[in-house]
Length: 307
Ligand code: SF4
Ligand code: SF4
Image 1 (cartoon, protein in one colour):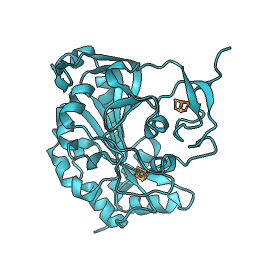
Image 2 (cartoon, protein in one colour; image 1 turned 120 degrees about the vertical axis):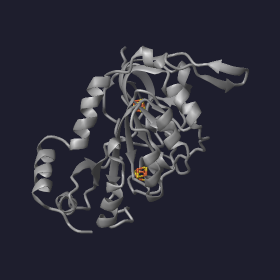
Image 3 (cartoon, protein in one colour; image 1 turned 180 degrees about the vertical axis):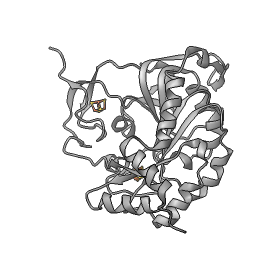
Image 4 (cartoon, helix red, strand yellow; image 1 turned 135 degrees about the vertical axis):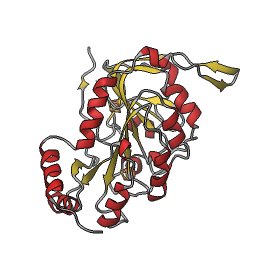
């Protein structure tokens, strides 16, 4: 691949380093226009889903100004990071039944009064219905965290340009990535522009962010650093746990479409609640499992239990 480090690349890098990746700015501007999803969008479709008693009509779900909701279409992932919380929390992951695009879109399109959906994993793109789901979602701000599996890049062209405000946040794992940088950048450049792709390095102590960033910049791609979330002494799988009041902003929905307060609880299947009965809000709630927190939620918004 010819290396591009011309004036335009330098100017783009200068801007992105000081402001924000250009695609992120585009996503953020559109998300300001979209704002918190409105009730009228949740009411725009009638959704009937099968349950034990026949067909059930889904009602709008008020998310009470939650900034975001984490969605795990699956826990399956093509990588094997040594710091992965999925591997850290459970010796053997619980079995999750995957749901279809129709089921996911049915529920997610009924949610309103929240700002955006984060698709986490695992690897969202490995879910067979990922593209149909994107095309069934309506008027959402969406961030997809992905490792950009090679076999799934071509299919991204099938995602409709209009309907949602999407950004693809592509991770570069310096130790686990099988592609060399040239191949990675070529694949990254194949992602359709309307998906506002950005790339970030998973920053771990073993590698030099500066050198990797320089290698990407030489190829005309700006890369940010995101610190790896490495389990600490606060993340235990075996207790003892403390009882606290927690305002986790990690409410998540598991692959089988149950809601949980954080990924630590989801991976242990503790406190699973059907979506329609889950209280989405920003209140502190009692939790008996402080210590089982996902690394990104530990020590965040924790208060003692009132006497
Ligand atoms: S890419 Fe993410 S989900 Fe996959 S193994 Fe690494 S940390 Fe875990
Ligand atoms: S205290 Fe920890 S385990 Fe409990 S809900 Fe909060 S983040 Fe999750």
